[in-house]
Amino acid sequence: MDLWYSENHTENVKFSLRIKEHLFSDKSDFQRIDILKTYEYGNLMTLDGLVMVTEKDEFVYHDMIVHPSMAINPDIKNVLVIGGGDGGTVRELMKYPSIEHVDMVEIDRMVVEASRKYFPAISCELDNEKVTVLYEDGIKFVKDKEDVYDLILIDSTDPIGPGEGLFTTEFYNDCYRALKENGILVNQNETPIYDNFFEVGISSNIKLKKMFPIVKAYQASIPTYPGGYWLFNFASKKYDPINDLKADRWNSLELRTKYYNTELHKGAFALPNYVKEKFENGNV
Ligand code: SAM
Image (cartoon, rainbow, N blue to C red):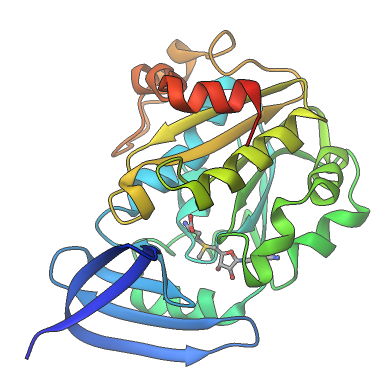
């Protein structure tokens, strides 16, 4: 008998993966967590039935949420990751000897524990001495922070359930205050392929533009996310993502990355017209 996992990307579009084995299911105080072994993408984690991470294509997302900022400001020392329960974002951050400390504020301990067991290659740096994992709501955590972080990465779920508040003006204001004067914020910003996701992305981009002097979207191809085409927002108090790219310095680190490189960096910020127009005009 064939077993398949399906996710509705819209009411008319379904994404399915053939399943080899059901590994884990449980419900935390925040969401349902399922882990399945797939034929094509290795282990798959879903939260409330939505794809979060797969062994096969996680490298794209985790490279692209981390490395562009690190290639722009090589002096980043203190980082806040909000969400990020699978550990992939922390893994990429730990490639930088210059980083002194990372706070990972993940609301759901069960996600981290499941990642440690079923995604060892992704969660492998969560015990690094530079990393503090805090099981708290990221929205509350940033409320009383000021001038603390060089970089904030919002590695969240979609704006549903516990993730809903991570797309609000109030939260972005709190993050702005928590950042130092050269601070950079990056958030995962959904897909422009489907209107319901695109509206979230445009709204998030507009809100960030109201407080950060530089806000640019960038892109990556992530096969298991809706539309297979994913956006991030780069919001900065000082640095321009293209003019301030320090490619030679980043390349001199000789880091091993499976997706990111400093040539791709420039292309990632070169958006198609239908995305540029919306993000520049802002009319949802
Ligand atoms: N790469 C994934 C994506 O793009 O959808 C995100 C991965 S990570 C698993 C998302 C994490 O955000 C989840 O572990 C979830 O528990 C966490 N999260 C959601 N809302 C949160 C909040 N308010 N504070 C902290 N973590 C939160």
